Image 1 (cartoon, helix red, strand yellow):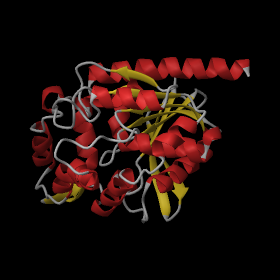
Image 2: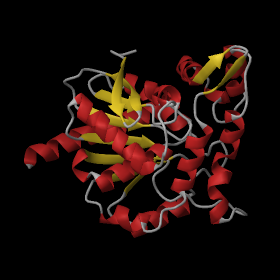
Image 3: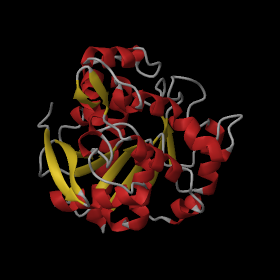
Image 4: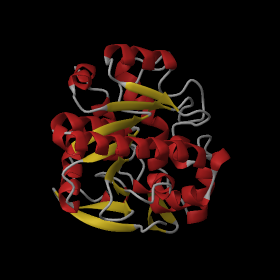
Length: 300
């Protein structure tokens, strides 16, 4: 991996684990992962950006940050990543954020607008439409139900956990060494009692927080931070129409006119950053965004 290392950043209740790729004197990109993921979800994107410093925390309650106490929620995660920026000496950064991490990124941009140069929301960060037959109050449970089932499972070996993920519709067609490393990193415990590192309590509280967004779109529209949204056409299970149907994105674009919208073809909610074709597209977008951000800073 390209100059990969890890940091421990002091936050409330302990240390936040952070993965870093690239030179310390390079422009910084803060990369935020999804609700049951870890910083290793960004490996392929980071490898495609050797001239940038990619800084990706394990969010509180996940992976090597799992021992950090609650309460959780988007505001707590935003304060944690402010501590990360302070620790690495970055006054501000381009923020690339996936899934739940996109809601964290949006919260960061609202609460600390001077810390976010531009914000890239990757299949997350806009209100999630309720699937047909699911009431808005039941959306959180519908979204995380399969993940909660996994968090309650035990696995007798690393190979058993790999086999579980190799059968997952979202990753089965794109299995790679990078995904295998991501899966292995998620395991905690001692064989034959291995479990996912994500805490059920953290995931549950964060899922509820995603659904309590009164005034959220108005807050996004009022932000001055340059804002992009990238859609994956397929969902968690490689299913259509994906987390954000085209008509929903069109509606959010109508309500937030300055929102730039893009789509990466032939990817699902996972592979938009975790498979080669998705990672290449996202890396290219990040590279263009960093260049635009630097040019704007020079003009100012």
